[in-house]
Image (cartoon, rainbow, N blue to C red; front, side):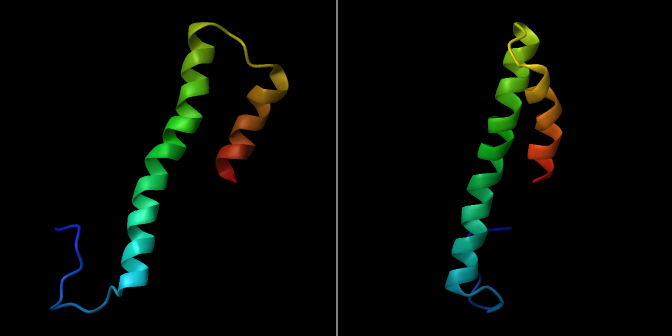
Length: 61
C-alpha cells in the first residue's frame, strides 16, 4: 500500500487524501498526549484524584 493516491482508483480526491494524511499525523500525537501523563504519574504520582477520574472522559471525547 502506498501513501499516495493511485490515479487508477479515483476514489480519493486531493482533499480527502489530505484529510487522511492529517488524521494519520494527529492520531499518534493524541496517543502521546494521553500516554505521557499516565507514564509520568506511574513514575511519581502527581495527578489529583479529579484528574485521574477525568482522564477516561477526556479519552472518550
